[in-house]
Length: 180
View 1: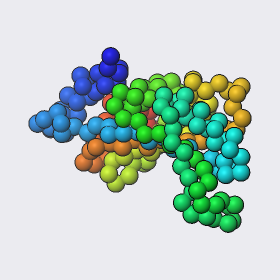
View 2: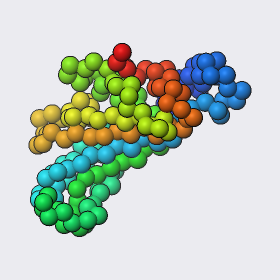
View 3: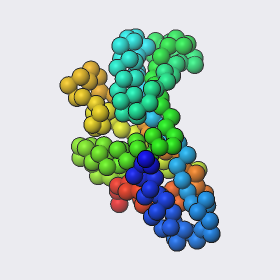
View 4: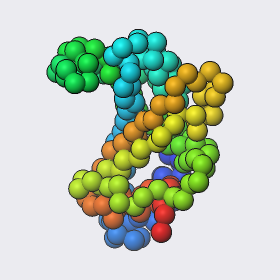
């Protein structure tokens, strides 16, 4: 079964983008390549329990087992040695990517306190979009009572497009709540 947002993309988003930007072929329309979710664990170097809890939370959110990221260099001021776990990340592609995006846009973002919309200035030069989330408890998969430490995360949407404007329109047609 194809995800709901993938059907939306194929049936309505591609024709809208083709009409607006004048694409002759559906393959010229911007599309998602991957979504990377990254969670840095500051105190993970001292206590491995924080890393395990963060990995369990991220696995529940993404529906895929995360990979531990380790320190490349030793930094004495932060009490980090080379090879210590300092975070975890997940790369989503295909159907899992569209299912996560659907949950993010329709369930998680509306649960943010004092939410005024996402910044339209978070695009990089290639048209990729980045979101920083302050707490993982906005996702319904996380049991708030079992959370030991509130963790933030970064969500990077890698979009294959020619410009920021094309990526902006793609996300707007998917229902991303941008602020004015």
